[in-house]
Length: 435
Image 1: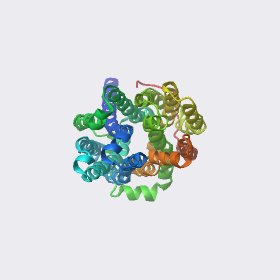
Image 2 (image 1 turned 90 degrees about the vertical axis):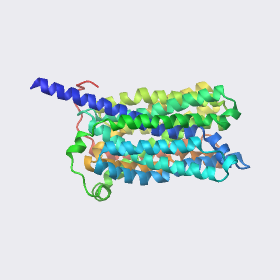
Image 3 (image 1 turned 120 degrees about the vertical axis):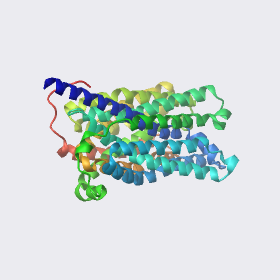
Image 4 (image 1 turned 180 degrees about the vertical axis):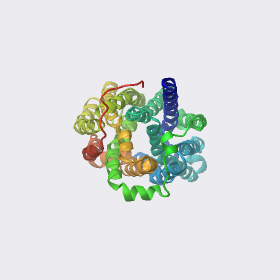
């Protein structure tokens, strides 16, 4: 009997580890594509959206980046419902193919100088396709990992989804630093910026193959699908969905306004060499990879709420002085310190957040409910974060104005963390078992 139990546990742990690998690769690709578009937005503005005013071109490129987010709620609902009805595995296989297709379109689209207006139209269509795909990815990936996780390990396992964001930022930054160091500006604008998108396209089939070979989650297999998951979420779980929405706000704003935007900010606003911004991005990515799983493991022992609440408050207090710091002492060291300090705080916040969602919503509507809450928040607050803070800087003349946008997001999410208190489960008394 004990032998059977040990073998069953070992098999389950092996499946759970495979689930982590499949999720990190696929989710990492999703974030990698968004990362490199954000990092190379200055060049993309020149290639596809040329105007007489450089700021106007840049804002149009950022708006195009944001336009994909309008499709995220649609993709989140459609793919979320699909995942709740047909399984997490099917939904995740679909999202990675759609994202790879959108990335391919960006990689091969000729410039505005070559095909005129058709060039920006194709870029917008690619961003819409990527937005649709990304909308369904987070809810499905979260449900998949949480349902595969052993008892008492949900925060740790789901934290690897967040760590995959760090992988994407690290790889995107490393590619950006290498390309900007070894290529001339003319080469970057001619073909160099396409290299990361080509790499992203090639990763897609690999991720699809890995995801096609994983098992469906036991929790989903044993659950009874509902006819209309979306209606069930809105009718039965509106409070839980609203709390989830408020928690996502700071997560998405920090991702786009700090992790993704700093390379462009350091170049455009601080007038620093591009390689410095990319090095700072690498620091932020590395911090997420290392710290986020640690926070997830600790949250399994000490609870989700302390990490959510205190990290949000710490970001609220810290972000303004950090923006003042990099503006008063612009340089590589200040950028690295900026990303290190805020990266640790961001990791503290997002390390347990997905497990919190899993405790707010039941299995049969988890993918749909999370997709709705996540994608609406991302569309409103995250997708246009870089556009908004660039506009704020232009209107106010203050380079530290992005801090106020982030502080506003931290305030909203702090309220969400306080409301989450009623839903937190009993804590595990000990840390047992292997990770």
